[in-house]
Structure formats: C-alpha cells, structure tokens
Image 1 (spheres, one colour):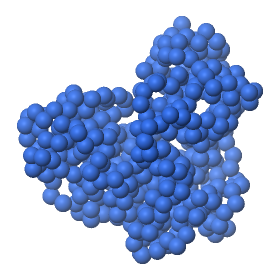
Image 2: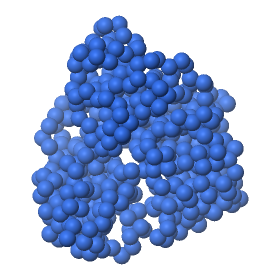
Image 3: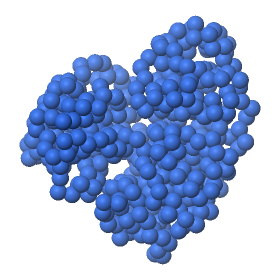
Length: 477
C-alpha cells in the first residue's frame, strides 16, 4: 500500500477541489491537517468546514510555524513568489506538489485507474467509483467534485483500485508536467481531446502532444480505454504500448469494441444497450441525460467489467448513480421556474449540456445564463463556437467579462472576448441574447421575464456571486 503517513501536513492553497479532497482523505486517516488560501467558495469551502479542517486566510510564513508540518503540499495555483511556499522551500521543509503527494500517500501500491480527457473527467470518475463501490470492490477515490454516492469528493477504501481524476493542467510552479503523469496509471480512460487551458497550451497540437505522453508512458501490461469515436482521441492513442479498448456511442463513426446502442430517454434518465463486439451484455438505465453522459457511463462500465465486475451488476449499480454537484444539478424550483447549476465552460460542454436540457425538459423554454470566467473563455479563441453552442437555448444572458489581466505563457493577451459582441452573434443565429453587467442585474432580468415551466441553466466554473440562491430567493413568492 502507500508509504507511511506524516504526522502533520499543511496545504498551501487548500481550497482547490483536489487539494481539499486530499486534505480530507489524510485527516480521515488520523493525520493532523491544516491549510491556507485566499478565497474559498462552495463546494470545497463547505466541505472543509464540515471536516473541521482549519484554514488560515491569505499566505504568510507564520502559518508554517503555527502548523509545524512534517510535509507541505503546494497547489498548482501557487506562484513562485508565494511567501508561504517560499518559506517552506527555503526553510528546508519537505514539500511536494499535490499530484506527487496524492500518489505517494494514497495511490502507491494499488491499481491506479486514472480518468483523463478535456471533458467528462469528474462525472466519469464518480460513475466508475459508484459502480466499484456498489459491487463490493471498496475503491479508493479522489474526484474533483462532490459525488453524491460518495457523500463527498474522496473515499479511502481498502480495495485493489484507486480511481483518480487526472487533470492535464500543469502540476506546480516547480513542475510543469501535467498532473496525470504523476499517478502512474495502470488503467487509463481518455474521454476526449480538445483545445483548452489557453494559459499553458498554445493550440490543439500542443494539447495532443501532452496526452500522447500519457499514452506512451502506459505500462505494457496496462489498459487504455479510449473514446475512439473522436478522431483526435483515435489519433492520440495510435502506437500505444499497451492494450487499447475503444468505445463509442451510437451514431459515431469509430473502430470500437464497446458501444452504447439503442439510446432512448424519459423522465427517469437515459436507457441504452451495453454492447461488446456485437453482443449485448446488459440494458442500462442511467439517471442522467445527454449523449456526453452516456459516453461517460460507457467508459466507466468498460473499466468496471475489465476489472472483473459482472455486467448486470454494473448496470444495476449505475442505475443508482445520483450525480455530481454542479453537473446538471437542480438547485431548486420557485414560481414554477427550475434553476440548475452546471460547471460547463468550454463551448463543447455548453453545447452538450444544452442538448441534454432539451431531452430532460422537452417542450420547456430553456434559459442559458453563462459566465465567461476561465482563462480560455475570456478570449476570442472560441467566440464563434460559443455563439453556435449558446444559440441552442431559447434565451441567453451573458455576464460581462471583467477587464482584468489574462495570464498566458505566450505573453500579454490582447484579444479578449467581448460579451456584447458574443450576444450579437447569438442574436444573429436567431436566439434572443444580451450581455448584462452584474449578477443582480442578471437576476432581475430573469425574475422579470421568466414564466412557470421555464428552465434556467446557469453555467459557470466559479461561485458566480451566489447567483443560484439569489435567483431562487427573488423568484420565491
């Protein structure tokens, strides 16, 4: 199993989903854990409070003398001039990146299952964890979100597998390799490959080269489960040194052994046939909507079956999947208006989530409320793609992009997304759209115009100034 645990561990920038989850896992093992950060927001702020982990505000060398740690874990958002991180490094304290700490303290000695890809990592990780847990394999898990079946974002199981979400983002200011390389996958899932993270990647070719490193480092006895319905994924996995199991969803053009076929949807979710080499192994009810979630479920099922789980048991377990917070999460209903929270921020995720809303809520008017918040979404790089994706809604409200610096390895960013221009592009596609400055003004517009039966889908990867509670509060009679 993993190495002997340190007595005290301090996390610099503990508020990230991965950092906070590892802190919780270590505390559950009896390690004294502390942390620091500048800004915390749900779900991790509430999770840390629930676990009773002390968090100091801001970054200061004194936090280390107060914590007296045996190990300092430094998050990837920390810059090289961070005074707390510098004090740990220059003071000779043992320090690790989050990724190395996770491997050393939790994954080492187990079968490492790493879920990677531009989209779907969190949901696929949670689905696979649910199947393994429900089928008695007692997995260890760390996921970058709150999985309802786990009642949290981690699980310290004692079974043979440790399932981890593998991010392609860089590891730390002192280690620019992608996080997923540090988990030494025995089994890996590759859900998708698209351009994202424009602050560290130049273009799609750069992204593909990074995923190729993952593929080429797979052990000869390993297994790579890949969404070969995507041409870019199929390209990346060519020449893999291990076994490759392709999967695809009905309607895709692909060379794949595993398929999801006979898709249909109703109020209970999405139904499909799990097919391997032309043979139907099980009929599946997934309590989620959208083709992207079918693909996520298919990847999870493939790995579960390859790890020895019976197909019918795996399908029954997936039917009990309750989702991940901030992924098509219903936050509430007021005045007949349903308000949902979704993490979608890449144009592909926006498009697929809106398509899922059409299936989940047929015949109802769908509002798309979108916050361009990420480094990539605040640029013009996806201007046309966002316009095409958002035009699938019935009504679009865009949050005005703040005029703050955008970091990039390529230098100053001058081509910025203009929300008003994007709104005009959406309108030219035939969908009413406008850019509104400030959450309170957005809330006021929805409250003034929403009608019973409307669905308000709020998409952001941040706190968005608590817009969900504000909407429900103002809509309440």
